[in-house]
Image (cartoon, rainbow, N blue to C red; front, side, top):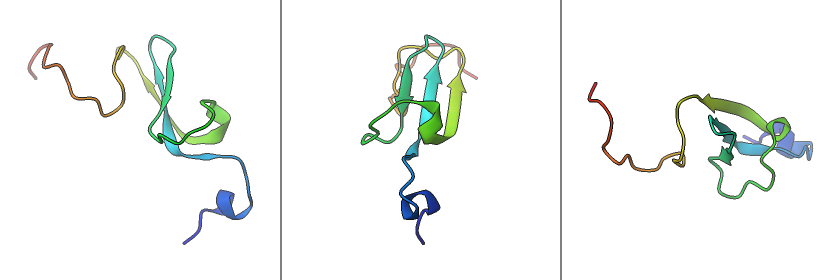
Length: 65
C-alpha cells in the first residue's frame, strides 16, 4: 500500500506533530524537515507537559495514579 500524499508528491510528514505547553514543536518522525501543522495530518496538543521529548522516559516524579 502506498501513501496517497507520497504517490502525488505532496509535501507532508508521516509523524505526529506534538505542540507542547511552552510552545515548542516536536515531531515523532526523526527525519521531519519542517515542524509546521500543514505538513502533519496528526497533531497532538500536550497541555501541562513541558521539558520532555515524546517517548522520553519519565523521571518518576509526580503523583502515583
